[in-house]
Length: 178
Length: 184
Image (cartoon, rainbow over all chains, first blue to last red; front, side, top):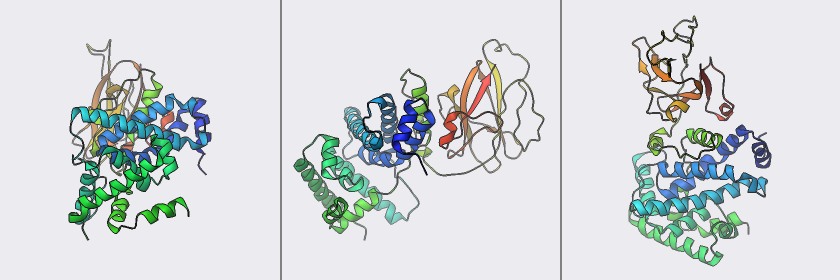
């Protein structure tokens, strides 16, 4: 049976880095998926996750609910993605860029194209729409959790999710592979 | 109504359901990310690792091979197919500041091997091993200042392998086998 988050946090605070390594292994890919879809490529997603893990470690003593370490860390990841996206916008056009990496390439060409079109459409969404859509439907948060995480009001989040869905439907209607 | 049921009800549109199904597919990040984080938090100076080695090509699955590293002052009398430490040559003009360190890998099914560690900023492109001509044997010579180094091998850009003849670092427990090398 694996250790609880709270136990691993406690061990980390006692100086056991292997415990923190276990926490990273637990959350790296799951939260990395969010970072990947928000930022559009593996390279930036990895940088966001790396920064998030370092920041979380250095602030770990401020994690008031160690049993909810995952939620606490995810908030850091979400904020880090926002910061990185702003930084990326200063250096290159982000919205509308086709992500340069596809997660897994072991599927048929049609599936590959479909995935590529989704990535392209997702990148065209306004960042707040993209964020809300991912948090709601991909990460499975409820609106109260999303509000705590983003600082936005629930009605605004519902609207963002709806508009994101409408725009994705519009962008993908003609390319939908049956 | 549960939150998940409510969420699913919102996704009545078949097209959006397919989009979400696709977006929920796993995304695997480079597992060396953990190593870099541990390295950063072990060393208080918050130096951000250079981005060039955060490459998508790193994200992948598995291959295996036996690994040997050779470091130090004395030979270990082993056959070439087993872990071997090769003797450093006699002192060179560089000996006052660095020592020659020979790394050796026996990985016959591999096409590409490198070593990453504290000595090359964990950059997998910095220190490739070269095939020797003997089947499956890879080597490289480094020059390292006296000190203690964490390191591991990367085979075909996908598979980590520690040094069976050197002690493991605590970080080894989370998957990537990190060895500790002391150059005296």
